[in-house]
Image (cartoon, rainbow, N blue to C red; front, top):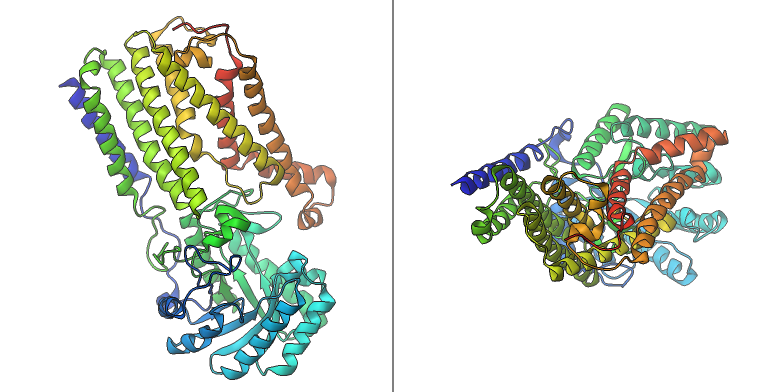
Length: 564
C-alpha cells in the first residue's frame, strides 16, 4: 500500500510539473488578419536540398504554395533556374501570391549566367506575379564574388527587366560597400538579431530592428536619397544553440515575429520574414539552429500560430504519458524488492526513478526532432540506447545502496564502462564546440542520464553511508566496481575541465574578434569585459559546464579500489 501511494503521488507530481512548465504563453498582439506581408519560401522537404541537387516536384510546390496563400501575401525565393524552381511563378499566381524572385549567385560564372538568364526570363514572362527581383543573396558575406563583379550582374538584370532590382545581404555589407546603394533600385538588408556580432535578447530585438533600419536609411539618404529599403530577412530560430543572450525557442520565435510586425507597421517598414518551412538540409551548414527558422516544420506542421497564445511544446502530454508508463513499469518490476526499503528511502528511489523515466523520453524526442539524416538518426538511437542501459544499471545500483546490498561487480563494470564512454563523448563534443562551435548545439540532452545518474548515486550513497567522506563520490565506489587505480580516469577527468576552460576562452574570443563588436567597443579592455559577460551569462553554456564538472568529479576522486 505504501508503494502504491507513493507511486500515485509521484505520477501526479510529474503530471503537474509537465503541465506547469508547458502553459500557453502570451507572445504579443495577433498578426493583423493573420497574414504576413512576405515570407521566404524554399520548398525543400525531408531528404531534399540544393546541396545534393534533390528538388521537390511541382506537385509538392503547389501544395506548399496553397499553404502560403493562407499565411502571406507575397513570397521571396532565392533561386530561379535550379531543379523545379522555374515552376514557382505560375503556381504562385494560381494561389494569389506575389513574388520577390531571386537569382542565386556563387563563385561559378557558368552557374551564375544560367541563374541570371532564368531570372530575366521569368520576370518578363510573369510581370503580374514577379513584382521585384533580387540578384544574389549574401554573396559578399560569403566572399563568393567581389563587389565589382556583383554590380555587373545587377546592371545586366536592370537593363533586361522592368521590375525594381536589388541585392540582398546582411545590413553591415551595405555599410561596407556603399557603392551598392547607388546601383540598386531598392536596398535589401537582412537584420537577424540572433546572428549579430553582439547577439541580444528577444525582448531587445524590436528596438534593434528599428535602430538598424534607420541607420541604413540615414546612410542611404546621403548617397542616393529616396531609395526604398526592404528588410529582406528577419526572424528568430525555434531550436538550437544559444548565442550570448539570444535564446532559440518556439515561444521566442513567435514573440519576435509578432514584435517585428508591430514595429514594421508602426514605422512603415517593408519586411520579409525568414522563413516558411524548416529547412533540414541547412543542418549540414548551420547545425540545428540553421534548420529551425520556419513557421512550419519540415513535414508541414504548424510550429506556432500567428494569433493567440503559443505553446513551447504542444505535445508535452505525450512526454508525460510516456514517462508515466515507463515509471510504472519500473515500479511493477521492482515491487517486491521495494517493500524492504524504509519510507524515506522508498520516496527517494521512486522520485529518482520518475526523474530518469522523464529524461529518457525527453531525450529521444529532442534528439530525434533535431536529427536530419539517417546517420544522425542512427546516432540518436545509439545515444538513447546507451543512456537507457545506463539508466537501468544506475537504478539497480541505487536500490542496492539504499537497501545496503553488496554491489554486483559485473553491473558495476558496465556502469563504469558506459560512464567512461559518455565522459569521452563530452570531451570530444566540447573540443568541437571550442574550436568551431558557431553552429554546434550544446549536447546537454545526450548526457542527461550519466549526469543525473551520478548525482542520484551520490545522494543515495550519502543517505546509506554516514559519516560520508568525499571520496565516496569517486566512480568506482558509486558504480560498485572493484578495480585497480587507473591513471587514465584522472586524465579524462582533467580533460573534461580543460576543454571546458578552452570553451569559455574561445567563446569569449569569438565575440572579441567580430567586426561589428570591435566597432561597438573599440577599447580592448571594455571589449574583453563585455564579451566575457556574454559568455558567462549564456545559460546553455553554463549548464554544459556544470555537466562537465559533474562528470569530472567521480573521475578525479579515484581511489586504489572501490569499497563495495
